[in-house]
Image (cartoon, rainbow, N blue to C red; front, side, top):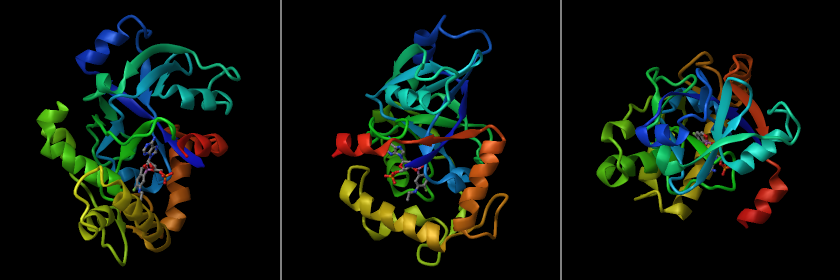
Amino acid sequence: QEYTALKLKVKEWPESAQKILEGKLPQGANVYFVPATLRPETMYGQTCCFVGPKIKYGVFKVSEEEFFVLSERAARNMSFQGIFPSWGVYPQVAQLLGADVIGTLVNAPLSVHKDGVRILPMETVKDTKGTAVVTSVPSDSPDDYATVLDLAKKADYYKIKQEWAELEMVPIIDTPTYGNLTAKALVEELKIQSPKDTKKLEEAKEKAYKEGFYKGTMIYGSFAGKPVEQAKGLVRQQLLDDGLAFNYAEPDGLVISRSG
Ligand code: ZZB
């Protein structure tokens, strides 16, 4: 599985994370949440970024001034892909639970939300896939759409501010079958009630992938007017060239055997 790993720079930590990180990072360090995505062309539509509240994350030192927040499994894999300076070495400076970083304000590259987006909880994030950080595009990902609806509805329960889950969803891809908010259309058509409707969400995801990739047209961003099939590689290359992302390959044999 070939992912694009995106760098979401931290602008402001919540108090819970500040306490844990105190004294562990050099002055002026840049810390990034690093979600892995298969859909770089949708990054304009990021409205938040998810972590699993019970998942353990590490803060790993990539260079003197750059630190990544992701799962230890992903850091180890990256250390064999030339992402850390020494082969097989991924120095960890702190450990956090997803719950500790809820509310962190990050800058999401290409997102229409230029003031930043929030780190929010998603119960269905898998520790065994990608980086265990998942950037949220509710216009085009049914899982993300179902999750942001649920978060906004139960903001108190999730201990978040409702407005963090309600950043505007901007249409970025038009499709013949589902219009320009594919995920919303599919969640409604399949009558998906909650992020726990995993079977229906799986079906919705497959349909959204197929429709978006083979029939979608970009209607936002530098490649507006181009088919998604072309734009995907172009947006990815632009992110790579601007130093906002890097390639991350998941050694898939391992993942299949672990997740069944
Ligand atoms: C942004 C995005 C926008 C995504 C979209 C999808 C869609 P797959 O297909 O099952 O391999 N993801 C990544 N890591 C995790 C994780 N650890 N736990 C849960 N979800 C994860 O899944 C790859 C996609 O699943 C990734 O691409 C990421 O969400 C999420 F419009 O990034 B994606 C129709 C899907 N649309």
